[in-house]
Amino acid sequence: MALTTLAAGVPAHASERPAREITAKVETPALYDDEAGGDADADDPAIWVNQANKARSLVIGTAKNGGLRVYDLTGREVQSIATPEGGRFNNVDLISGFKLGSQRVDLAVVTDRGLDKLRIYRISPAGLTDITAADVPLLFSKDEAEAQEQATGYGLATYDRYAVVSRRHTTRLGIFRLVEKHGRVTYRASDTLDLPSSFRLPNGGTWSPCEEPGEGPQIEGMVVDAEAGVLYAAQEDVALWRINLAGGTFSSIPRIVEKVQEYGVPASWDPDTEECLPDSAKDPGFGGRIAADVEGASIYSTGKRDGYLIVSSQGDSRFYVYDRRTNRPITLFTVTDGPKTDGVQHSDGAAATSVALPGYPKGLLVLHDGENTPGDGRTSTNFKFIDWRSLHLAKI
Image 1 (cartoon, rainbow, N blue to C red):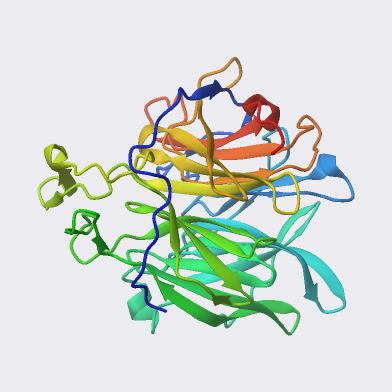
Image 2: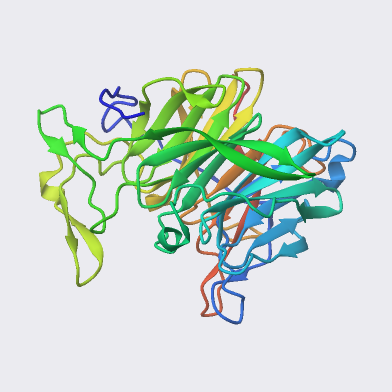
């Protein structure tokens, strides 16, 4: 599906309010992105609620070349899973009640951007077990050689028996249906959609976000509101989008919920620094509040359609909260240094649950911290556990 029509969301330069400052209750052990640390780089979390024993619920996080990490509710690592050879785990999400033989099981689905495949794990209180079929297909690449170019499966959001996957360095989204095969799990492509890479501005001009030559404005952070049949997709340098879903298809023209601050600002690629240089003096004023990249979308439910949508403003380490039903802006917050943990900077992935858990009676918010401190001179990342009560949000 190609797109030609867009709709605006939050007005450009919407009025700002002071950010609420909160602190994390728990943090996971530091992951180090170097040889000694196994090239582990925290990225995206998911929360598995153990319905039989809430105290044995788990937080599952990707660590890129470092594979998967599984934590208990105290932040203690209880399992580490390596990637297959050549693998690099990017995002993770969950599917509940998947029919596997005569049983209903819960699954953790992971994008392996190194191999352009999904990996699927069965979840139990004891941990994760790989049940990926041996012959799962490539997600987007036509062959292994193309997969080596790394325009591969990237962002991920699941619903029902489907996984929505974005393709790195492009604007493409794909839907894949998970199916059982001889006691294991594979998947089949169901639909595709391409978000725009060029945009008509209110002043009649045209703007494209600056990217490295040969790359497009990619999508990573995503979440599906299954009850509403809506996908929220964060196109990093552009905007947060809302897209309707019907079964295994994209069923509407995407609508922008909110743009990034840099929307419409001209910029050019500098090959020496390998960065985009914006011409801020020519900012036409069409951007929103989010400082690129827009990342880490998650939903906290307070009812069948009510609750909150949380989004990471990665460029300024803020988080924006929207009304789940209307997408109206509600509040914003930052996670600062506290008595037990440091704050959260440049967050990529997020996960939330409103289920009461031990120590989290109103639910849990887990955030990736892109600059964990102290790093002792090494690049360090981890996950922060937030008590939902600290946000002081009344039920909508």
